[in-house]
Length: 394
Ligand code: ARG
Image (cartoon, rainbow, N blue to C red; front, side, top):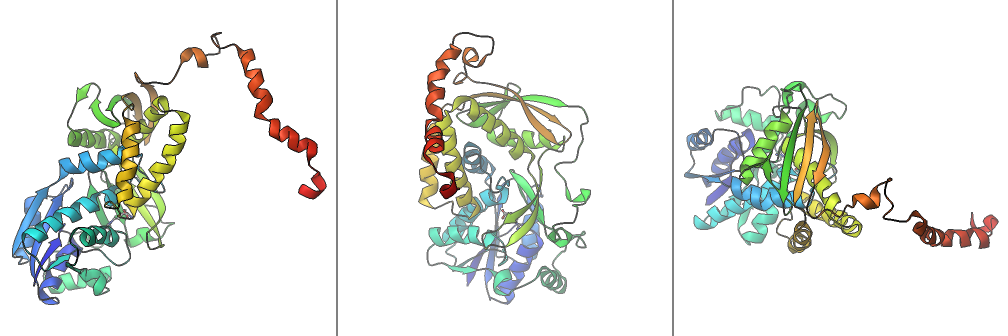
């Protein structure tokens, strides 16, 4: 049997290579999809080959990831309970690339290293099942009910290289939109995260920094007047915001299975860009659009969290979102300092803002015109007060 495995080079997926060979009698082809992994991908390939794979693919999906996934997330102000969906956004594109290779290779099975407790299994399998219907799915860690300790033990027995800091057994996942750190001592929700778990948000700059982020049709296109490619804009924003310690999130998250989990994230670019984007929307969209879009954005985010990228509703919502974003063009000025990112200015040719209307020093609007509206604004409450017998109704 030939199995294609989604491979990151980490402990779990390395253990999966061996398990697929030994316990499932498979020949294994590994696929590593680059969504902004900072690891040396040549090393990841060599590691896979040393584990005895039939073949290995490395796919650079960074540009597609930013343009088709991250940019959609920005337009949708994507956030699930305060988490900017970094891992959740990347799983579908990874799964789709793995499916493509499985089909090309005429594989019998398709495999991932997710556990039976988390969200990633749902995300991989929603794509596997919808894009490769009928293909056998193997999830060794879940099917063998392995704990992290048992995986480490198995790795030791099978001479699978183990990370040097295995005494800090965190589960880490990273891509261009963020880094997540979970497990080990962090599983105690009251445990203060040690400084050394953070890599992208160490404070390197002590002076405040102000930048101008320009948007076109809802997505960032330039920093301080310098236009840049989508991947570069996200990387640059990770660097700028991260160097001020912006983007740390420590939260309790409701997983798909209903389990509450303690999560730590570092999402500098996501926090900065989403903050700016939302503020620009407030300048250019109507009150009604903003209120309705909140509902759409939260439905969109929930679908993505649940791994339902291929669900048609996601595209339906995108159609609405894209239409609103045609006017989300302009700039936002951001100030970074001491773990905070604040908006200190914004502008757009589509602004629905009138200085004359809002100003206390202007007579364009005759204040007395408000009187008629005031009379009707509370008319029903006045009637209620007059007619209602308080003894019965309160
Ligand atoms: N809780 C986050 C999510 O579900 C992060 C998952 C991280 N995955 C991992 N294998 N470490 O999106």
